[in-house]
Length: 153
Image 1 (tube, rainbow, N blue to C red):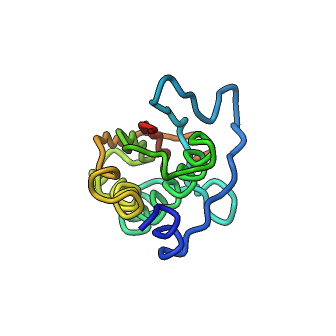
Image 2 (image 1 turned 120 degrees about the horizontal axis):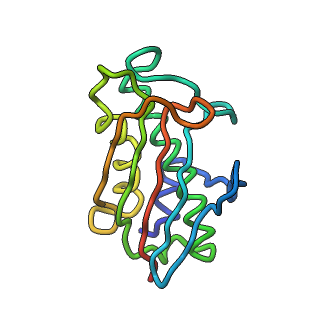
């Protein structure tokens, strides 16, 4: 089953390439490696403003992280010349989770993204190294920001 068949089965439509909000590129490719800039969680087209441990919980956060992963897939498709089947491997995710000092489930929030990449690319290509950090704030007050590194064929 192709990546696009899996996306269709999951009911996922990929967004167009996001326009950067500041002085950076949405992605940079060097050799076969592509580095995607951080994408923030959005709800109804606007930054999903929330802080874990204050006004959003882990299960809702997993949905936010999954939404970020879908946005990352849109950017990755563009970086891969329009063909996600060129993705040889998702290498690493770095997740920043807007958290109070006593919130400790950043890794569980980030699973929302990690699980989607495994569903879309399969366990061999979609499994990846990962870091998940709790941070005091994210641009625009977003609850989650995730960046991605992938290898293209």
